[in-house]
Amino acid sequence: MADHQVDLLVIGAGASGASVAYEATRRGLSVALLEAGDIGGGTSCRSTKLLHGGVRYLELAFKTLDLAQLRLVREALLERSHWLTQAPFLARRLELALPTQQLWGQAYYRVGLGVYDALAGERSIGHSRLLSQQQMRQALPLLKACQGGVAYSDGQFDDARLNLLLALTAEQRGATLRTRCRVVELETGGTGQLKAAISESATGQRERWCASAFVNATGIRADEIRQMAEADAPPRMFTSRGAHIVLEQNLCPEGVGLLVPSTADGRVLFMLPFHGRTLVGTTDEACSKENATSPSPEEEAYLLNYVRDWFPQLQDPKVSSRWAGGRPLLKPADQGLDSSRVVREHEVETLACGLVSVMGGKWTTCRPMAEDTLTAVERQLSAPLPKPQSLPLLGTAANPEHTITELRQQALALEALLPDTPERAQQVLHLQHNFGLGAEAVVAQAPMEAREPLSSVIPICRAEIQHAIQKEHASSSDDVLSRRCRLAMVDAAEAERLSPLVNNELEQM
Image (cartoon, rainbow, N blue to C red; front, side, top):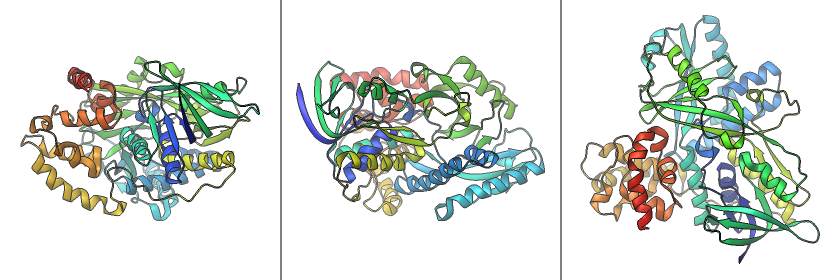
């Protein structure tokens, strides 16, 4: 059995684990990042694709006078701005319309969203504004009649790609990254402190990872690692399933999303532009970890009923894809509390054996979660960590402020490299969205036939598939079609059509 020695072992390569690895490498630590499945293959690729403070949390903060909710909103709004600046090819500003039926409702939401804007301070990405009936019809032509509305801004992003690039950037800086590599045992020394983890690959190969500090960043499975370290550790996590569907119909033709302000169970609902289609979500159902990734028929019916209610002209919406993700929620003190009321704060716990677990939280705040985790790691190391060094994400410019300008310049080079097809303009956008400034390198050395778009839904080409397998740790067709590109999340049938081609590429590698 091979032995390895690192400063920090991170278990789980979802949003929080990849962020911890990225921030740790910035501080000069030697890091190993172990993932039982694919990078971001769990909840982290199954979000609503929003970088947001959380309008619902803001409303709860004022209704319940809960400062924890308010702090979460403020922190998330600052992080929203961070990612829009640091990864502009993966994240963009998105305006959402909130419809109202009475003038008092319009005034209520205008005031609330004004507070939302104010909490962002200098990091605001746009001010909320009133919408007339005519403006609502223009933005959302099939929407049922309403008095008007209020529009506000949040961020929309590619969760799977950002997760992947965080992990790959850490790897490029020197971190060891293993996928399909499950931690099966934790070893302690004579003092009861963790000294090593045993991992097992998909082929049964075992390795020992000795480290000075261990981080558990396994999301909804955090309790499994905690109880592996200490058998009597009390459970802390419960899982709430958020289901999403994608409609073939584009209900947001002007690029403005819809926030349904109130549902029967007290949640808000989003209907968002998504690759020329409409993403609808999300539900909130307690579930087991094993049932976290698939929507129930009842959840799909629930979402479709709201689509028909708000878009009455669309009585036969066509679902092209569906997925769900399990939110890793911390158990509240009041066990009867509805999960929709749980604060999406995170907690960093250190067990007596030294295991550091980062639990709870949300995608938008993965960076402060990582920083808080490293504060706990610092205590385990009994030495201050060095100050973080600059580490641009793969695909961005050395100075992030220059990324957009360099992307414009690269677009011209990509046009010259790609075959002259009806999808060429869309293909340029797709490549830049996925790879940023690394897009040219993905296709430049490939033969022209490998650059041909394979689908009109998302114009992935064979060169990208090969790149995903060779450079991005993809080892299944689902890795490629669900997370390296989003085809399976947009059109499941189209992804199924391309699966044999992807499997053929995997066999040849």
